[in-house]
Length: 278
Image (cartoon, rainbow, N blue to C red):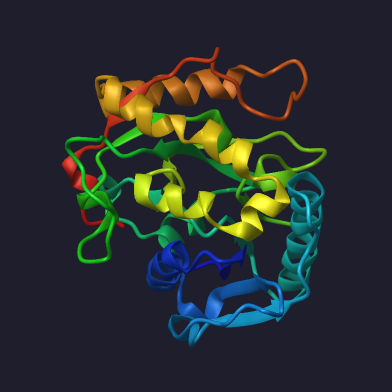
């Protein structure tokens, strides 16, 4: 088995961080999780016990500059972890969970240990929304995937989140500078940041986020809820297969190391086999 670490940086995001610790702790071991709180004013949550958690001076005040500085910081931390003997590093936000298709019968550590990775590896991105009128508020009383069944296949979340050597992530982990990305079959990045209307409203009421300039971004990305509410959920296996091929070969002209998909808005229904994964 390869030695694998997962790292993230958070501020005012304990709801998703709790699931992050629960999920990656189960898949990789809590001792291999590295959590960096953005701001010395933050209170470290009790559920982080057993992980490698620390607080750091707040990074930046405006979203674009802060995001660049955040990923520079995390890229440097990843390099330090490689020096400590890790074979692979997973870099994701607290609302992002990389999962293996349960049809394989493998956990995340087992799956990644079988992969030959040159520099980086990308799961296929799925941006979850809330189907209003059918799905209620997201809670910890049951698995997330037993509560959310629809996602938009999104190029923004097909990220080179898994690296095999020190390198530099771009903002939001959306690319690795100087390297192409490689999408692997049967691996998915599930983004839940816009999967609940109530949580979105709370984020819009977060003075920290608004002061940094997140309002426009949150409104823009919240369209995922409208898409999954209004659009019919298509066959998961067929359309994820199509998306993987499309994103592998298509590139936006302004960023040749990012995936593209002709601006298609494809919503898929998640198969029941995923219900207990997350």
